[in-house]
Length: 219
Length: 219
DNA sequence: GTACTAATCTAACGGTGTAAAGTAAACGGC
DNA sequence: GCCGTTTACTTTACACCGTTAGATTAGTAC
Image 1 (tube, rainbow over the protein chains, first blue to last red):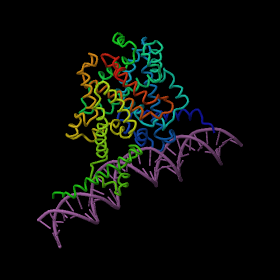
Image 2 (cartoon, protein in one colour; image 1 turned 120 degrees about the vertical axis):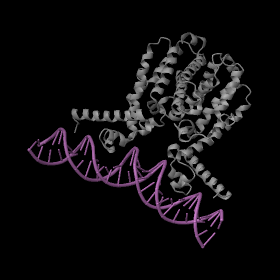
Image 3 (cartoon, rainbow over the protein chains, first blue to last red; image 1 turned 135 degrees about the vertical axis):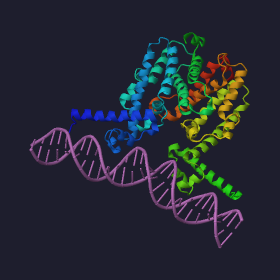
Image 4 (cartoon, helix red, strand yellow; image 1 turned 90 degrees about the vertical axis):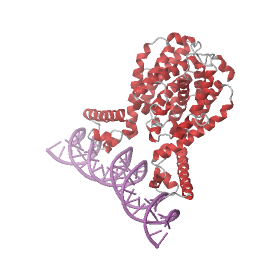
């Protein structure tokens, strides 16, 4: 029996209610505060009811994650207007760390949860989105790296856009994730986050550029 | 009543048995596989018995962590003989990532578990160890950064050893932690870990150095 | 031998994710 | 309008988790 239009809409509405309630809970209280029972209770259901709409807890988190990846990419779209690709990479880096700092729970879910991909493998549409700079932050960075590479801005020894993108990503991820896991560690004597961000992005770029001095000019 | 010598030794032996069993379990199966019940069972106890020797689960993990921090620092002592501080920083970076890759569960526990410090605040002895380059990897790196700084090897705009150390640490941590959380992600098209490591350490250092060309010579 | 202490046990509490079985409502075909 | 099927939800239950309380046992001190 084919489900009616009405049913499909209602189904989607319930799904959205589950997701938005789950999101609110973990944005406020962190990922470990989210339990199926609490989500269910907050929308007037019992825990097993969620299994009608999602295969398991991981699928709920993965769906939130999917949406948040889009949010991060949208966040970066504003940077597309920056003409100079090197300056754009720099701004992407700072924006990335800023996003992580302002949405620590989102960030933890997206980039610091092991095996999330294992739990819920991406669909074909997801994989397609991953290669679209407008929909995926990594693709956007890679696209910009390629631009700088094509313009001959990097040292001749650096030719692999994927490798450079992965390294730049790792650099900002390092700053972001250390801030999240150890940022409030009182005996760590942390320098201000934005200073660490600038040194990271500045040093990595200067180290990659053919003419390091041009960075001072553009920033 | 003062506990006898015999009792104290036996107490320590049980404590060691708990720790070594816990370590074996999470080295083999990861941190989430470690439960008090399983640890206890593996050494012929019941779960509540562990509470005689440790305040809670966090204290067990924190103690493992403390030991592993020492192991990492010991791992670095071999690098102390490298005369050139810049080359030493480079080798520390590569060694750090290698350690993380070879001991992913140790690394996750040590640097990717949020609030571990909150769970079990360090003792005064621990804090003292944190400032000893022979006992703490971070202190060792900072010590080396200071040496390079004093030798005038870095750009004049980089003067803060703590800030530089934190940034260098973040860079290698980024490579290491992405490898652990996403290293087996099949649609990520990762370049080889040691290529990413070298690009990271090389680019950061070149970006910080007053005379970037000298890096090629030393490596 | 007795009093005390420390180590360990069993039993239990409240929490987790999830599976199985039952119920009530909505639907399509006649 | 009724019947069989499907869907969305319920209650109940299982196996696990960290942790606490109370009983029990062994060992030491006097």
